[in-house]
Length: 464
Image 1 (cartoon, rainbow, N blue to C red):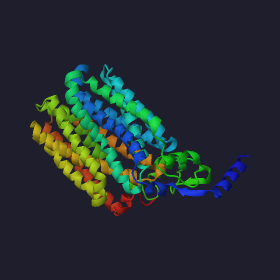
Image 2: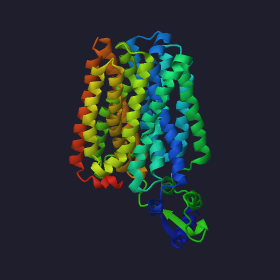
Image 3: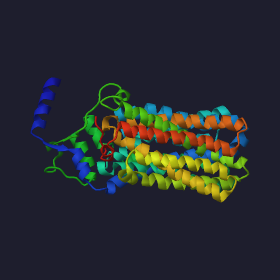
């Protein structure tokens, strides 16, 4: 009976009108529906950046309340990064199998409730556990919101949208920085974790109610034509005579078999994937070390918590600008050359930040430029990952790249914590952190040699 049903279904499809959804999406302008998906995912990404910043800003007061040693702060900072790495590794492939929307909702709720629970932490071990759980949610959400958003926009806009979406990370840091300068002195460090928990929980509910699953994913997994048609109608697309049963929707991509991770190294993608992971690792090692330790380092250099909050806010202002501009600049200056250039500039700014302490104006300037360049390079890597893999393994590709980055992010704060405990000065510590940024620039140049044709990434396609 099943064979007969399949045969009849295939015969019926033979007489249907076939519609290539990739062409339909590519032909659509960026309209109200795409803006809705982008806006909701932007808020979730915003809370990722705010969460990182919240921990860094709260660290001096939180450490005093819980009587934490300086050597314990490193693992606490690294805990969410380690959790992020595991979350991206675990939930990225799950999103490719079960859908971006369901995994995004699950992970957003996870890091929202874990943030709320952090205010109840009473010891180093309970705080560390909650930071790891928070990271699990953040790591699982990231590849989902990147994939879900970029799969609803045309190829020509994918790099720009991916970089604008990633601008939410430093934008969240801006919000947290300025909010922290007002809320922490008035209401204590717990107020920031309440904010970091309530907003993502509300955003997850909006996803449930208003955001559909990726239409490309639905086609690859055999969803009904009616379901696909309903979603396309929200894009303003009406196909055929209006009866969805008369239309068969397809995509030029194909469903993968076996472990998704293995496909990251097949069909000419091995060198691309390996170099991308190394670049992510080095970039996040420096990025998270700066975000996590700047408040504490500047306080030790004689700056107040409020001034350090302002400095970090400017870091994220610069990052927000750099990330937002990265996609457009990559289209003009090259997918690999542009990140390499700004990595070099970022390394110089990281070193200058430590040398300028404790002069608030100078530190704010160099911190803002650090965010501009290093943050812009981060967005470049995210865009390359989003464009470099097909739909069937996009969440896996983005997730594993971010996992490699968060492994670096977990490593950086621990290394800096060890350096601080050994008595290394503020200026020397920042100079040390600038080294992996230089190495990341070299990796991008190697990636350009492996994939010299930048144009194939700008259009959102690499040779598979």
